[in-house]
Amino acid sequence: MSCLYPKPRIPIHDNGKQATCLAELCERLNTSSETIMHRLNGVGLAALDRHTTTSRSYDLLSNSLSQNQITHLQSQLVSFRSALTTFAIKHREDILHDPAFRHRFTQMCSSIGVDPLAGPRKGGWWAELLPSVGDWQYELGVQIVDRNGGMIELSELVRLVRKLRGLSADQDGKGKGTINEEDIIRSVKTLSPLGAGYTIVTLNDGRKMVRSVPKELDEDQAIILALARAPGKYGRITIDELVLERERGGRGWTRERARGALDNMLLQDGLCWVDEQDNIHDRVYWVTSAMKWD
Amino acid sequence: MALSTHTTTTGFLLPSIHSAPPFFTQQPHPASLSIATEQWIQIILKYARHRRLFTVRVEDSEALGNDWDEILRNERINRKLIPSYLSYILTQMVSQKLAVYEPPKQDRSILIYWRLPEEWAEVLYEWVRLLGAPWFNSIIHSQVSSTGNLNTIMTFYEITDPPVESPLSGLPIPLLRQAITLLSKSNRAQIIAISEGEGVRFFPTTGKA
Image (cartoon, rainbow over the protein chains, first blue to last red):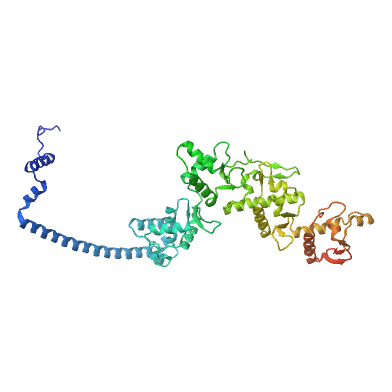
């Protein structure tokens, strides 16, 4: 169907134009548009009083409304929690024995913001309900995975997970909901059947590190590994070499950075071996994966 | 260079890891250390068997001119096993019961069990039973009798230093003593005081059915 009427030359509702007119008017009167607007509502002290009264009553109303809403929400939450509890008890067997069901249930909880981990350290109301599920351990495990990019010192991991879960660090292993090193170690062990490859590494000096074996390499390590595989290298790397290499590449590695990266690979990850009998260098690092064996 | 195996002048085949420079330094990472140490223990045991060596001392890695030069050093890459690391390896061998400190109550020198004392006991008993000492064979014409040297008294020296080289030639006395002690537990040998010091008498197995 074609348009029977010609387009009006001036749009009927042209807000842009109106605004322009108002601005022009203000300019002519040498006053602000706000003043003009207020004048539309009334003039003088009476208007001011009226305004105050109105806003006060609005505040009151909004307060009582939100109070109502909070109470309502709280009661909803209580009934929801009891419903969830009933559900969990009713479907206990399914949750325990059907991994897919259990997964969906955990997902549901997380999507509506119920943290099964919240609660007493031994496992929250989750554990009360379904003691053998031990989802708390799994979930904590997942949080460990989230925070642990490849290799991390255990104490640092504890701090990060506490932070992640909104727990203050000063509740040293006692307060409810706190996490301590033992919890992390247990959770890492819980993860092991999943083949995630998370392990606790104890260094020679007794420090404990959590590492993921399918190792996520940081950028520096990736660069070192690539260099170690370069033709003719056969895994042999020195600090000098890294500093020089970077100078050539123009990005500039400091000696400290090179040493730090290599020592990480050596001490924490066991990705390289050290040779302390070189004629020139104090330490020569050998990336084992790049060494060539006949 | 790629790491390759190497045959020493005494005909021992060194594994390729022996040509890796870091192999001669004690590794700080526990997993790396345990891998390297296992390799060292295997090399030491094999070489000891190859050359019939019974003793390693921490000093053997420091000074040239001992039986272990080919193993504890690699002149081709100018490396030698750091003595503190060798000391650690010796400790590991003792804790794995592949060696004992000899003399006891120190940790600088070990007696290597490239055969366990139990195995030495059997070797000893078989040797005595089948071959006997040469002087015995010269009297009795048949070289292999069913009883061999059983029931006669032998000195330790006759066992460890026979005129014809035997599987027991050079066996250290402490190890011989351990072997005899094990045999005496099954009533197959007995240590006897003789004029030249100590001797041992071997008994035929009673063959209880």
